[in-house]
Image 1 (cartoon, chains in turn green, yellow):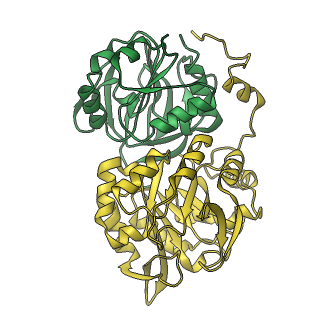
Image 2 (cartoon, chains in turn cyan, yellow; image 1 turned 180 degrees about the vertical axis):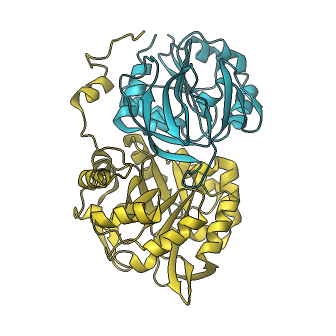
Image 3 (cartoon, rainbow over the protein chains, first blue to last red; image 1 turned 90 degrees about the horizontal axis):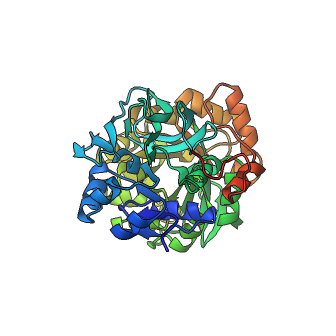
Length: 196
Length: 279
């Protein structure tokens, strides 16, 4: 039988936290690098922590780039896992998965505006997403972000507006960490786990 | 807008939470997971779990309790104490911690900061600093968990802050020793000096005793987070009350929201307001 939901092991230290977050929802979410298992799963989660270049080189080593690009089922990219869904990541000048047009760029620091953007910030809906039924506060840790363009379904502000939640066809991405965003974040994961 | 963080610190000794006064005697406060969950429910934005016995005794953090906390907690937490190598940090991060904080081991071998930032990214590398004023400058101290071995490190605060940021620290937690444990307020002058020297997030530690102390740290020293232990453990300040008071002063705070029974149901897949198959 196919898995209801799998987590792609693209490296990074938050795999366990994401898995535990689904476990708190009563959902068993196996962690895998098996292309056939990922392709057959009903839903796929792509977490990522660290650098886009590291995540992309790991996906290439594992031979998962085309697997992920051709998925038709719902996919959720988390943090760097969202950033690599775009065509280009400025961090390390990386050619990424490209299932979402556009680029991920460095957040600009300024006096009083710290980078990394680390902490709880407000996520505001600006489009329609099956993952969100309310605005709320989420936990962010990142130095790069995508523009809040027409594919952004929720935005956030840190000096500039950026995409907090993005959707392109079956590909969903959240720049924050839903696994560490309290009740509100758990709700986002619960709604993803019901997508089909 | 990025909100200011309220961060309870749980000092862990031999697997239980303890509290201390001026780094002296310690009293047991309770079990780690009980306190972690309580603070999460009360609206804490993040937790620091600080193994105060680890560094002086040169042993690693016991990752079993890190795993238990990671499994039950849905807010970020940082583990401090006893991390002196990339392997130590990997064990703690793999157990589910979001960040590691290093203090004495960084003073002993500053290249550790570079190694951790390179391996795991700056976002999970916190440098903790214990500092006190003497002879015209703030001076960093090492091994402050062990009164018999603690002392000045030989590095001034401001030079050390510049160095660790250059080496890749993603956040600074500054514990002002002169004000720690006595609840007379954060050391605003020292925090302001540190703020001017920090382009990364800065967390104030040491001295919180009243709501006004938190407000002063945010308003006067522009810190990103405020850490406290005893005022929370004793119940002298309740986090929901603190957050309401700070918000009413116009400080950006993540609002405290009591657990919503409907949201809890949705986590078990029974929330009638959420369609089973959203389009």
